[in-house]
Image (cartoon, rainbow, N blue to C red; front, side, top):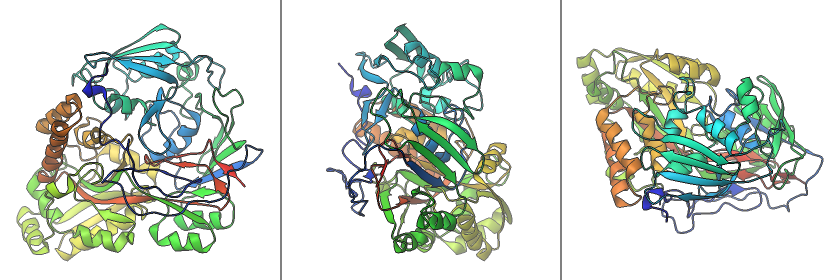
Length: 538
């Protein structure tokens, strides 16, 4: 019997937030109060058959790498979801858990032991057999003591001994049985196993060779062919795939940095699908005769204060600067109705926290006086130049807008901008007072958002915040059965983060995708990746 703790979160998209696919119109949630009621049409043409054609998808930045243990960005994920598979996966239109490489699972009465029954006859792209031993090796390389500091999602996904949570052991009693034992009950564990970061199951042969970052090997419907940096990643249909084969013969993910250049490439039929669309370019896309798919995003766009910088060690300093920024005005001006003001870290449809959380209110006069009293005259900011799924304008535009607000109160903010790959390195170095960042939810569970501020990995916890009271709340949230008590714990997390002004929440954006008429069957998922296995071209 499955314990309440092991059941899926009631906030987990199971009932809704339906994804846009190219074969159906945008769907609102089935009974969910939290899903958007906005809609748009997707392609109406009949799906084509599998054939000898190529689907080309364009995005704004190179992957950082193609080993799921070592990356945490959407550009990498967009490629990896075509190549790798997980023990469990999400339904096409939600974060409901469905079978993956594991056909079924059982949970012990105490909620600590998960027994997964694996598919047989599955092979990796390099010919290695997929079995329980291979799955065990894939997981264990990210567990202590094997885990390394450059695995950004490992502790976040699989826990740690020091915190008393996560995976305690993995056993493979036979080829088709995998037994995972946890240190403590985790309401988010099943959802974590389906995430596109950390959790995909990699070839043990390729992992041992240390070549996965640039030569990924999974069990998915498409296998890796080549990666030309800053140009494209090429994949081809895997003929020995265990399931329904991919529709297209080949997939190409092209790197086109500028938003306008991607729109032009789509209009010229150089590419079939584009993401990272600037909201101001929607009319251009449709004016070219191309289509827009849109969906309320499971995301947050925010400004982070470096709580370890000399300038922002105190909440008083952080609050003083936050008062200078009219977030509602900024969101209305920048995003043209394609993003909503973020009063809470999680989107309001995920949990009804928005009305209960008190963010710092705009007060330019008070900000000017308080910054003067505190000696805040110069701020060093870093940001990213390219568009992100949670911020189609890109980080530079956002930083310059906030720079304008601060100038009005007599505070100078210098801005250093980087391409996305370099930006990740700059964030890791920690030489900033303020940085801009965001998050696309991986699994629909509140822990996936709120645990960011408890992470010891500062490439994820970019505010570099270390608050024991907050960490204790996160631990309680993971161990609490889904329901009102768990909701209240995450509400306390939201309130504490707001009171301490660790982030300045800015917006929740709609996810936008452009595609050619005649392109059909792709799965535009709420987790902000697009699955291309079923994609056809008329």
